[in-house]
Length: 405
Picture 1: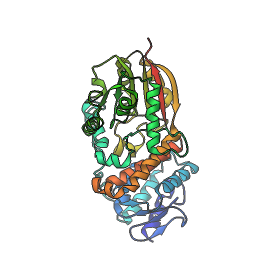
Picture 2: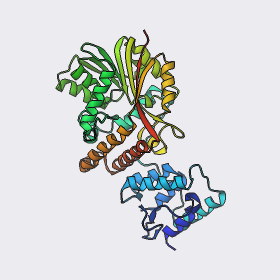
Picture 3: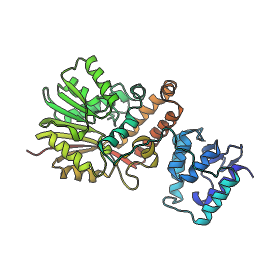
Picture 4: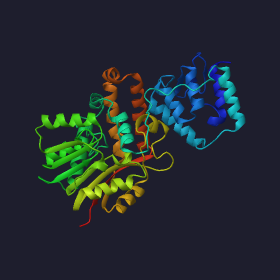
């Protein structure tokens, strides 16, 4: 009996019966429905990882290292697996001791039983007290300091790393990001000479847009040194010196107040559950009475507020999302009055589609820059993120507020 058949029989209690995929093992054997998406196990280490880290994390580790391959359409394969799991009611199912023992014996027989392989090089290693200044800088650096050129190859020319706003079916990603920035600045009521704070400014898309197109005086804060260097060059190139200031500064360290407006695009997810009241208070303190605050933020319900084991381990350590209503309540308790909420979930599906197109179009250069393992991490991240918004497991919203007079 080949490795594939042995493994298929061993995992039957875990997957509720027949394999949902066509499994091809390292010895060339195959098992599972012939018309299902193909999954290749190219090394016993793939099985070893999934034994030591059952579920999403072990499978993700095996995929990013190349020990597990999905040679076809990754979105199609993952969607099929999610559909089968839902139809079979596999969520939360825990096989009994006998099933676990049979799986271990099967792994032993295929040579896949052994000590756990080391984590992939791309897996985040952050230390220190949760959401301390140092740990937050390390977590942000893991993801955002990958390389400015890398992000230039994936994002649109404005370098907006947040959900765009598509006004029509033929709107391009670049047009949609510009429309989103216009929408934010208009909601904030920006006029020439007004002072704006951009909390978690990224590569400066909102800061530069507000200064260039709305005449605002902008302070942007980031804790990524690479982002700061990138924005400072764009400030000089666009003749915005004296109109945009970018600081390497944590939101908790901003000493200024009295800003006419405050924007924060998809940064609140990174402050953590316990620190969110501190974040809300910082927004309230920074804006003058009567001034507006706009937060664009992702939402998520149920288990894994950090996005799931893969996202938490490889992309955004320590991230925390919650249902929209809970975020609104926290912002209100921080002293801000909510004036409107706009849902953008469907727009994120199209945004990520644009990023995937850029990613695949520039794949050769991206691989030269960051290596094959990072490429595999990002392909899984982009495809999985698109699915999460498409299927409603995650949302994103603009929350417009005012500080009461």
